[in-house]
Length: 308
Length: 308
Image 1 (cartoon, chains in turn red, purple):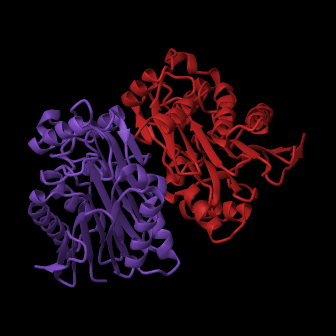
Image 2: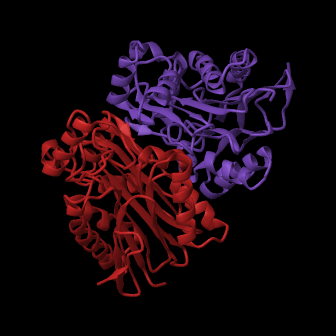
Image 3: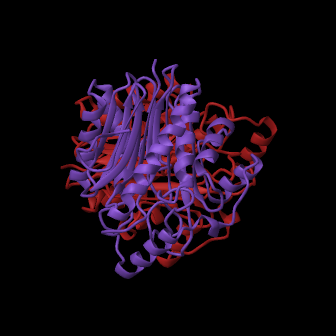
């Protein structure tokens, strides 16, 4: 089949000043993933490449530019899943590697386990040849500013980060289907500004931040992590699609269902096994982009659909 | 309504020598939880009490008696969920506290977050007044023996622990409905013998090891953790019940579906909001017990139903 890839750059109250950077970043990321698919590469490699692109980009809350915990440190997490055999790789509480999603992919390929955290994730990454970087090299000016704002105004609100208007929003994710019909999903995040040390969110929890099943489709979510995991948002969307509901309706139904039940916002991107695209967010904004039939479509506002 | 409580003591290839200890332990645990329900207590407190009882008991792989990682250490995890508002508390990579489930319950009540791991979970627990214990005080002779056997035979097999006949099987869990109709679920584990340092399993992942929703029911699972989390086993059972399928059929359908898809075994205990009981395991054995209408029913073999 014709490969498709969709990415998101995080749901939340994204300030005006960050809109263009995010729109540029999701287009770069979706092209990086699409290149791999076009060359006949696997969906797993395509979603990793798309997420790596956003982990490098300080406009996104993942890898470099991750938001900071209460102690001013980066603690990142990521997950990747193959829809073919439901294989999973995930990591959490990563402090000193540039690309958590690449370590997660290695866990999927090379570990008897699915999720490794903290010291054990570091031991695994070093064994597999990943290089550490100084933790402070992952900290952006924007992330420092977001923590300062959090410490001034100080409570977790209704966005991923908890501030009414901050710059750190932006868990990232990608969903792809390759020419073999294999579906893969990758999600990566720095969590929320001002989070407690050791806080683990929805991203590494399978069925919350990430889910892929070749028999149904793939989903990556973003938004208020604690609400997403309580609702099992990605798996909820998959289960709706399993009953025959199209990707967009399933995504809208579950995201709005979560927001109604838990009073916090989220967003999700979805592909069905037939190549149906689903995009919905209950937050103010969510940057997204997809490439299907050689067209790049993208947006960040509600009811916005731009074409490159 | 009439309160009900059900517990499990872990699915797997439980050796004959451990059968009686587990049958005794699940009955003690279910009575501990039932006492609270009978006195008008909340489902959350009842499932915590039942799990604490099994965390104390060396016949179960949770708290004291937890199996050991490759470095010979205990690393425990636990989760608890309220079906009323979907509140969650969970901890992972806990090394030196006696009752991970009680810390998880405190996370549910007193943290803006749902899941805390490693150092951060310890910081939280100490802040809330929990006392550490020497890590080696949690290690039982049986757990040491299970690790020695793993290191001799050395690969992860089709049971929770990975050995054809070992003594360390036994993630524990409880599901209760109280007189207000509130449902709660608690699950606690030491993971699998010979696991990598930092391995996080299904137990703290909401929708995999634990799920509760007053609108539907509650589920606690046990078995091969990596398979349970890939399948989102607890949430899969909830979603089947949501379509009107009874607790037992939903539990059997999802557990067998997971085993067929992923070629590993599991078990689950389920209560529907109407008080329907579901029990199923694809492993050789799973200890379980419930109290409903003042009768204590229990078993550990397939098609076994004993009454006290």
